Length: 88
Image (cartoon, rainbow, N blue to C red; front, side):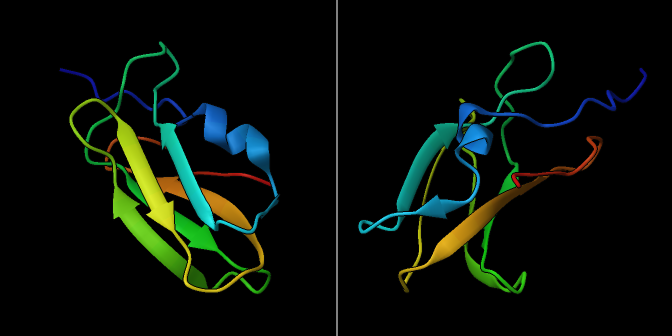
């Protein structure tokens, strides 16, 4: 069975760079075919690419991640078998 090399995508990736008071992001990680991706690692990266928070997507691809500090963040998604993806 071939491994899909699709780029992980999600509506949350269009939120690049994020600045918010609540410092929380909710979303759904999906593949190129718009199917949910379970077990994707989702990272909030600060302005110097340090991890501010991390979580895993659930079996429906859903996630919620909250940063401890206010600031601007990018979102990176990682999953074995997929190309990594990062918001701008």
